[in-house]
Amino acid sequence: MKKYLLAFLAFIVIISLTACGGVDEKSKETQKSENVNVNAGVLNESDNANTVSKSNRPETVTVTSVNGQSEPVEVEVPYDPQRIVVLDLAALDIIDSLGLGDRVVGVADSSNVEYLKGYMEKENTVNVGTVKEVDFEAIMACEPDVIFMGVRMGDNYDALNEIAPVVRLITDSEIGVVESTRKNAMTIASIFGKEAEVDAFFAGFDERIAALKEVAAGKTAIVGMCTNGGFNILGNNGRCSIIGVEIGFENLGNGAANANSGGGSEGGNGGNSGGSGSPHGNEASFELIVALKPDYIFVMDRDAAIGTNGAKPAKEIMENELVMSTDAYKNGNLIILEHPAVWYVAEGGIKALSIMLSDLESALLK
View 1 (cartoon, rainbow, N blue to C red):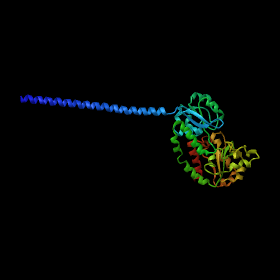
View 2: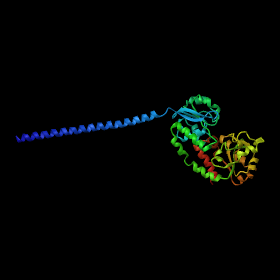
View 3: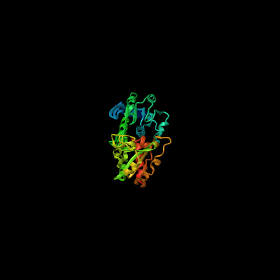
View 4: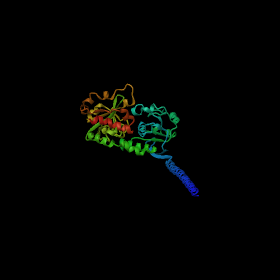
C-alpha cells in the first residue's frame, strides 16, 4: 500500500512540474509577443513622426529677388525643387557649394571657370546657352521647377518666367560683394532648407578680409580691366569693387570721370563717376594712370576671362613705358589678378569669393 502511495505522489509531482513548465513557456511566448508589439509600436510612432515631418514641409516658399528691371520682387517657388536650370555662374557656384549639383538639369556655359566646367560634361545636364544668350527651347525641354539667373539678361526675365519661376540674384554695390554673396546664398539655401549651412561657408572670411585691410589702410589704388587691347578704369560700383569697398583701398577711379569730363577715350559715361555706372567701366589712357599716382594698380584681364582668341595678355598691355614709370610699378605693385574668369563671371559665388581673396592675399601678404 505504501508502495502505491509513493508512486501516486511521484505522479502528482511530475504533473505539477509539467504544468509549471508549460506556464513558463507560455509566459515566454506571451512576453516575446508583447515585446514584438512594443517594438512595433515604437516603429509605428517613428513612422508617424516621419510622416508628420514630411506633412509639415511647405509645398512652396516665397523669396525676395529682383525682376528684369532689377527691382525687388517676391517670388513663389517650389520648396526643395528637384529640377533646376542655372543661367548665372555665381548662382551655380552657390548651388554647387550647397551640394545640390545633382539637381541641375540645365546650365549656361561654365567652361571658363575651372571648378564649374564639369557641369558641361555631365550626361544629364543640358547646355542651355551662355550667360548672355539663352536657348529657350532647351530650357523648356528641361522642364525646370525653378530658374536661377543673375545680373545679365534682364530683358529675358519675363519670357523665362513663363517657363518656370525665376529667381534673379545680383550683387548690390551698396552692401558690397561679401554681404551680397551671403544674402544671395541664404536666399538660395532657404529654397532647399539648407540655411544652417551658409554661415559655416562664411566662417573665416572676416579674418581674411581684416588682414588685407591692414595692407590697404591709407593706400590708393587704380582698379581696372584690360579689354580689346585697352584699359578701362573701374569705380566702386563696378566689377572688382571688393578692392575698394571691403578691402579698403582708396579707389582713385571714383573721381576719374570728373577728370575726364571732356570726353574722348577717357570720357565719362554719365551718372556714377569713375565708370561706376558701367560694369565695364570707362576707357582710360595710361597718361591718366600716371597723373593719378596710385600706390597700387589692380588689373583684371577680361579677354582672358572670356577666352578671346588672339588677345594680348594684360601683362603685356600694362607693361608699357608710361605705366612702368609709376611708383606702383617700380614698387612691384602692379597686380594682375590671377583668376580673371572668376572675377568677371563668377563674382558673387561662395567659392569665387574665396578665390578672389586668395588672389589678393598672394599679391599683398607676401
